[in-house]
Length: 229
Image 1: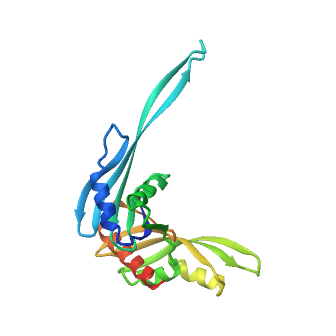
Image 2: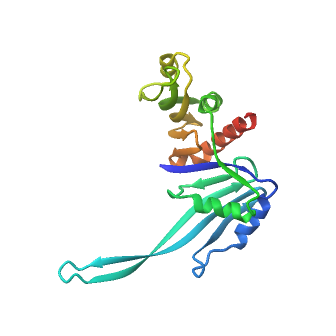
Image 3: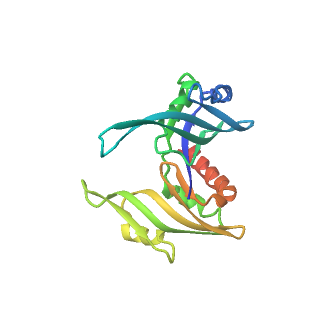
């Protein structure tokens, strides 16, 4: 599965400042980090952040108890797109630790931008999304903060591979308050059928072949929701 993660960015007119800094901060072996730019258009930059790490590993000979130290070099590459709008940072197949690259973006603006994880209302987003596809069904859903009493909340995971599970959840919870954390959907559009997973903190998982069709729909719908918050 191909993974995309988005962040909510308040650029404070610093978008071009960050982009220019990235383009000029080219990766070199000497400084162990930097950027490689791939595509630039008005209000769009596609690039990658590269970091190099040297790790020393010791291996002990079990017969002689002598240790030999080896140096191992690790390269980490984070592909990303920057756009001059609220949904401003898009990380592509990001590593587990992404704080370094986010801090680097902020430092290039002299910390005059604000980067926040998305906080999506998937309940509202579902209502917007379902009209964008020829066919759209939710086959798995994770819910949290379900109030079953004044001080008690529970989580719920529901799956149905045969049909849409959302209506069953709505009936089962019977007007209780809850938050949707993640959905797994099947869809068809322009005779293309596939699946995607979307979480309320801006994580998308899908097949790489879906991206050209799926990404514009998901991103436009998220922007629409963000604009009404």
